[in-house]
Length: 69
Image 1 (tube, one colour):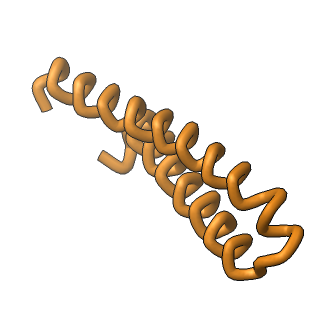
Image 2 (image 1 turned 120 degrees about the vertical axis):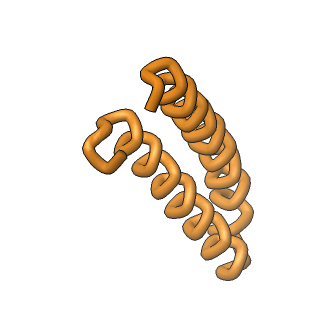
């Protein structure tokens, strides 16, 4: 499974979601003007990245099911 490029891409997408989520949480923690301008932006980017990650995971599961393995 670790040799499958689609699996690696899906896991990198999950890692990107985690990084964006942590950046968004960090902006909430800071408060003030920075939080006001950036926290919603980070959460929107997280939603987009999460959607892409879910699509990649579904593509991986579908491809593995078609290959019989």
